[in-house]
Length: 341
Ligand code: F7E
Image (cartoon, rainbow, N blue to C red; front, side, top):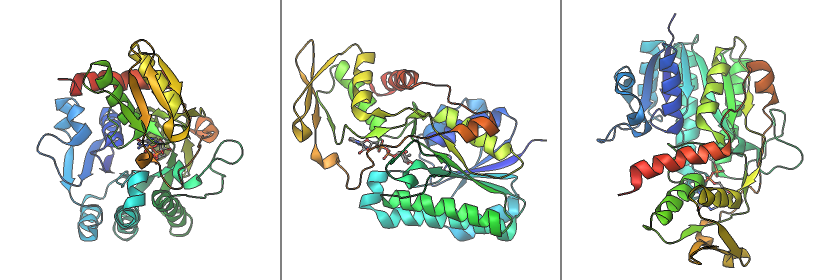
């Protein structure tokens, strides 16, 4: 029987992949979206028209408790995927209050609406590796102690604990997918991978000169958003609610990502200098193409984070399928199609 699902935050990168996968499975997909932009619905504009027309969109802020209560009570969803969040770590440092309101109140609204008005509804919360903080020893898994280093990380730790509490003590079917960094051709411009790809494509085409970055020695475990949304659905489809890490287990620096992206467009780099004076030149033209701008450094930046997805592999049969080079290729193609004049 087809399931009736709600995806909060459907307008973002993850919402696109999740909506597409669930529609392909024959689910009736409702989406909660903050506001519909006039030029289409964010990443959803990339869905085939036949799929777009099947979506049922509801426009509201996640912190509007009255609206959420009514929607949850009226629709009696089978499953709710709670994606809506202020997801930029850098922004959370500048705007902690907004981040707390959206991430903490948003989840609390959804969870209490389910508890009070539709207790048979399953709840899947997209958590984050940011709640672990810096890697200390080995890879980070479901049993790694949490030690967040940003307001964003703190809100994701809160969400993880709230979901566990509602599951263990209030009898809700509630689970957290702990997602490590996941990128795609629909990534927002506030994230470093998208910023690098956009700039490299424009530099290669002669429309930009220099890419300015912060800490290029930060290391991340970057996977593909489409693979991770496939994992999230597998969590929801299991009878027993539980928490799972989704990660590739491979650690790469921002500098590696820069080198690989430039090499995809046929540009090799030579690096010189240290710290905020470090620069990269285009080996063949000798033009300056990368420099450091201390404005992009973050207090409390996580130096490295790398996940162990063994539990998801064992119990869900999940594994990442798209490697970093393929992710970069997809991002470059999308960028060439959309931003070059
Ligand atoms: O930064 C460094 C920056 O903003 C990655 C979100 O999806 O993953 C993401 O959070 C690294 C950091 O992602 C720039 O300092 C250097 O070390 O792409 P990001 P993030 O903070 O790792 C987690 C798992 C989430 O849950 C989040 O929602 O790159 N970096 N230079 C820079 N970062 C940015 N944004 N811009 C720079 O110019």
